[in-house]
Length: 59
Image (cartoon, rainbow, N blue to C red; front, side):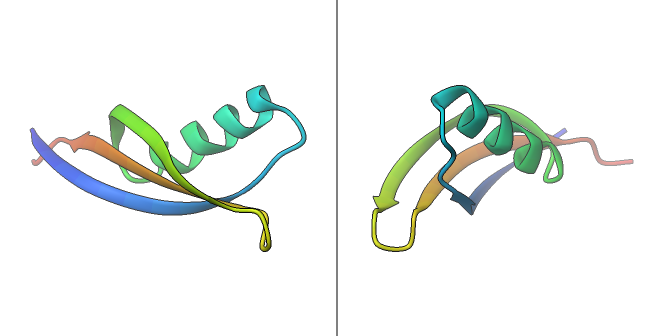
């Protein structure tokens, strides 16, 4: 198993639950999320920057 640091940009959603769901869906594409945090919000572009640690299995 390997760990990776990833960042992604997510469109801000109408509710915190929708935002959390969107973040988790995007992170699943990278691997299994261990932890993540919204580290920056750009109100002008309505984007949130997310930093995360994910794991992937190596075959």
